Image (cartoon, rainbow, N blue to C red; front, side):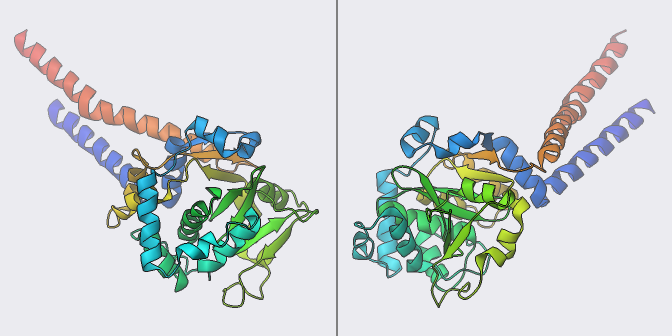
Length: 323
């Protein structure tokens, strides 16, 4: 009788654990918190100003030369973008070059990520107004790096963009909305500076350069829901790597897998971590603590219910028989 109660309790506890796991891997909020707990590092605002040369000392990753060359060869052979199109931009200052690169492919997308596609195929899709901000950020980074620019992908809770290093500082380009932000002196702002001014109602001017074929033509970027939701900029992240082709290839290898595989699998040896800086009030702190604490409890319960309790039960049964 005691054995039946013991194993019934054990069975129910495992059912509860399974339900908790299923809920976690199907809940986007939980997945994003898991991603941050495992694969992000908190930094201060000064870290965001470090040049690429220093970032490499902190683990910033880049594509191997052969991988980058193969990726660019595919782009030149499949998309209509030619070597000469990018080479002709080499004399332009970094900001003007970034604007021209964005115009090569960006008409804004439909918001649905093309995670199973290569960078070349993402460019083809983008020209048909298909793709999400993450796709556009990856495309821009690949083309910009070929032109000689140093880039890194940045994001907040809602969207992705890119920062470009001009030799002295980082400035922010949004390839999806084809826009940038300026300060009072008409200098491009970094992503952190843009977020800081949005949250604290600082002076900011949005510069839209998408052209007549872009979905945002004739609209005010500051009126878009993305930029009106200022709390989304409370925490911003910068990807510690520009290995765009390696990341895209890894993500394309798991297109039919569950979403939690998309989040966790690409990190194995390929995808670098995100650095995280808080700009405004971090509303997710308590949730992170709750999830981290819950994860610890879940692991302890799993070990207890599947190893410790059964082992102890078998041990006591065996000992009684010997006595």
